[in-house]
Image (cartoon, rainbow, N blue to C red; front, top):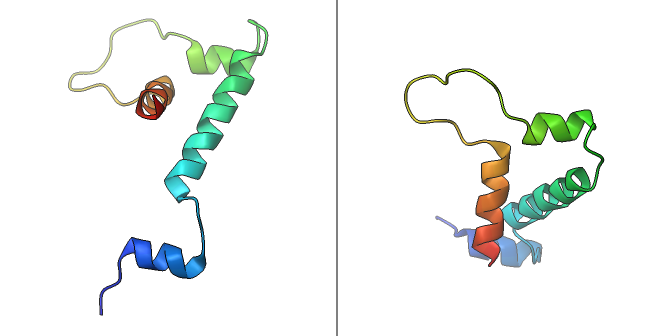
Length: 75
């Protein structure tokens, strides 16, 4: 017998999906970092640019790309 995700969520009475909870945490952490001062190591790591050339092929999704995609999905 196969079960759907909806039936399992209803049975657990969990109103929020895991992906929604993860997206909320990502946006919360991004807000925390964006309010830090400019010399914060965490902010430099997340928002900093790396000098040099990139490898061939499609570029991997960066954390900031994921934040932008999450914000666009909510709007």
